[in-house]
Amino acid sequence: MNKKMLEFIRNKAIHFILLMLAVAIFSFILLEMSPIDPVNAYLKEASVTAAQRAMLEQYWGVGQPLTTKIFNWLSMVLTGNLGVSLIYRVPVVEVIGQKFMASLVLLAVSWIISGIIGIVLGILAGKNKDSWIDRAVKTYCYILQSAPSFWIGMLLIIIFAVQLGWFPVGLGVPISTLNSNATIWQWLSCMVLPALTLSLVGVAPIALYTRNELVDVLSSDYVLFAKARGEKGWNLIERQTLRNILLPAITLQFLSFSELFGGAVLVEQVFSYPGLGQTAVQAGLQSDVPLLLAIVLISAVFVFAGNLIADILYYFVDPRIKENEQIDK
Image 1 (cartoon, one colour):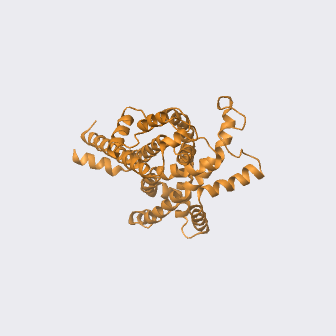
Image 2 (image 1 turned 90 degrees about the vertical axis):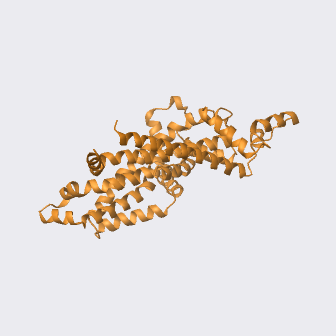
Image 3 (image 1 turned 45 degrees about the vertical axis):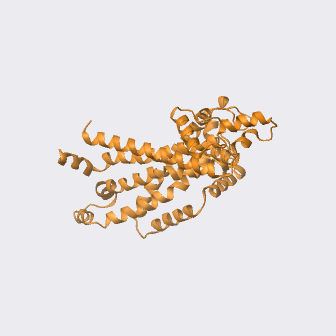
């Protein structure tokens, strides 16, 4: 492991610690300033004695200084204790563990599909600039960018679930079927429409950005020189432009982690998909502070992971990074 790699790991570790610390503190302060009362949220309409309420207030830190509350909560987080969910009445770690895999599979499938389709459409539009293909791709992307994800989801439900009956309306498995008893095909059929919705939403920025990058590259001097040598068509795209447009496309694709996670919140709610997005909405509506804070931290990890993977792939996609290392040696 060379010196530059060690510096990279050290810098990323410092950035990750600072990011998580800032997200944890500011999200806690925002929830503390909100009108949420964790004691009443925990009790709901249950009748308790004054002594029992006093014990709960002591547990939730009612009346303590804000700095003390933040310090106590950060201490719990560092030990892996994220508290107890007010909705599910179990440790938050267990809730996250149950919901995480469902959301991870949905996000991964949607992310891969949107990236592949977006890059392909962007290359088609850029290669055929100002043609009907270019106009069709741009119109398609503009419509997708202006349409909210929940509207697209409801439209897909009306067409493919209600009218055609090809897929279930929602949920993670068919109604009256336990998760343990559901087959892989039943599970996949319930995931098709949510994944398709997220994919359609994520296609537009990738396609437009790839298209614009390809148009710029095709007008560069070295591409014009390649055309003068007789290169054309897909051979020209593959040999002269693909590597140049992959770098910004990969960057944008991994930076879309945060937008994808935000879209999953609405999509999972529309389809009643049992993932972190729907759980976040439930936690917010039912004042489940520990669960909501944990999901905020998880989303921050998603964003950081996307940036980190993009930086790592830079090394393999852009040969200039390797050349600079050889020059330094």
